[in-house]
Image 1 (cartoon, helix red, strand yellow):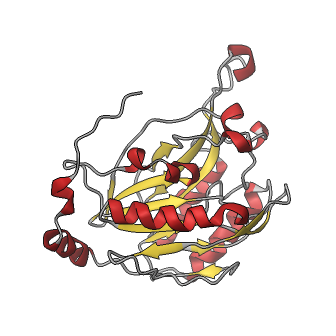
Image 2 (cartoon, rainbow, N blue to C red):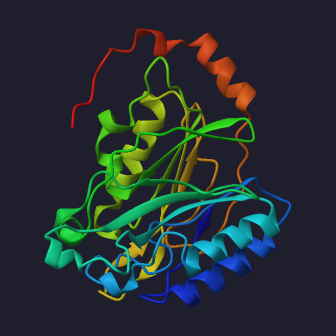
Length: 266
């Protein structure tokens, strides 16, 4: 779990900082989680910062995953528009996405696009939502990724009886002014989905003078926070999630068997 300030609107600087942090934990972790929009900060109105999927930042992430033998999870702004196409404005559509990713060692990257876009922060005006509800498997664990505002929508993250995941990973740019919601809902999503829950937020003040105090957390099945970040702390935490303990917990308390059936319609 990497909780640190993000350099505003500077993908190259943020990529270099991430490289330094990952080098320090080489051989110590299977997955590294960074904040939402780790390469720019929450720059929703800067389409010039959006890179092609597979562009320079993605190439750097893949290199780091290969070199340090771990998966990297977070999100960044991508532009899906091809260079020879008319502009998104001319087409009347938006091709920008807040793309969540998992770059794995020596494998194709996995991705989902943020479903719920934060209108108050201008995100819904410039970006388009995704609709992928995927569960990824890595080194024996089944993982679901959510991006910041998605945390507020429990149905979107709800387990079902045929698609259980072991770890919910949430990456955020969640400001200090609303941090109690983050604290409460991250724990709630872990409890109601009978899984481990990890949330990684940033600290510091961004280019819009919005303050962030972190509160990254890693909850076990008893809602103990294993990360132990102090308020506003910059740093790295490595936490262990024993899958056997989770599976045993589900056997002893099989609440998932009593879950309501539901359907999400677009």
